[in-house]
Image (tube, rainbow, N blue to C red; front, side, top):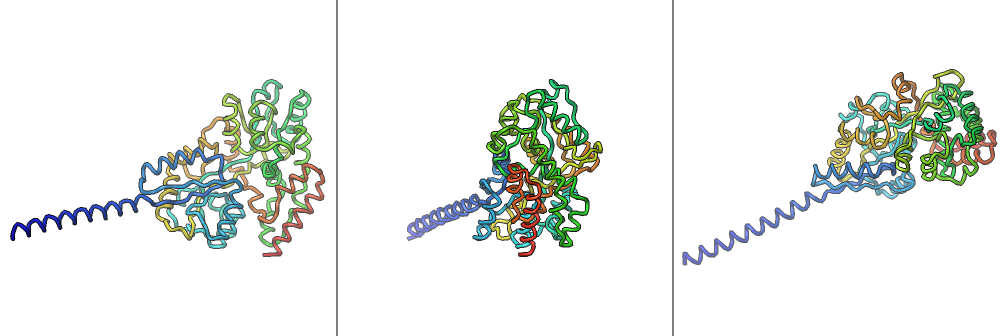
Length: 411
């Protein structure tokens, strides 16, 4: 009898071990499959984020990060928000979409997040300026800048100096044209590529009280954008013939292959240019918008920031990934590979190609992107695309003013 009881106890113990083992295996499986979605609009940074995600997942094997960066990402994001299908982490710029989504309660209020202490105060203020809110709903990560990208070899061959005034800028374009070369390469097939040059022209000519008046409800675009629009049209006279037929990607390749002396783009184009021609000798300089030397400000704003969805089912894991990206070595990797500037304290962009912007940043001669303040319902890029075709400045100004007023009146 004792023998039977012993056998029974052994069998029960064995079953207990098996069941416990299965339970632990099941529990372990659940721990591994924590998936978070990282949605962003920086398609040119997909490869960089792939590497960072791989590193994060190796350090955090229980968290899997799905990177999503579709074309027209901000349009896709608004559609998903309408369907209540919101990604865990959202990476966009400090613009009107950020403003609208913050006010709609899509993002977590991060005003008391300790990670904001890592960010330079100027960029936090930009978020408040754009949204009109005291609360902060994103952590700024990277800033970019609009600049004139130039081919140093062509400048050297033609004996050209970096211009310091608007008149000198036009004189350089005239000399390039007289030498049988293209001064500026435009990619107007993609409407958004009208914005880098217009942003700089508008920011430096619209007047310091433009946004103060806007906050009072007074829209001044119809009158204050005139000089910017006229100078935009003037620059188009020094482009190539098929400006409307070339897109951004083809433009990067063409400029990389020496098709023009200058490229009116943001510094984000530099990595793409170098992919097409690693040996190209590039430089950048601030747009000289006025005829007072060194008076023009560089347009630089929050290009990428991270928001946490209020509806996220995995907020702890999402926060952990954001904090990983904010670590110095990872933030440096991003700005190095993407030719961006960091919004974080103590992290400096050291690429010699960007040395031409250093003095502007050092003395604080920077200003935010004007289009970040233009309502989503005003298609300034499309209007600029039309302006490039018609050269009708007055019609452009009337379109922007009228559309802006309509959007404001609907609010």
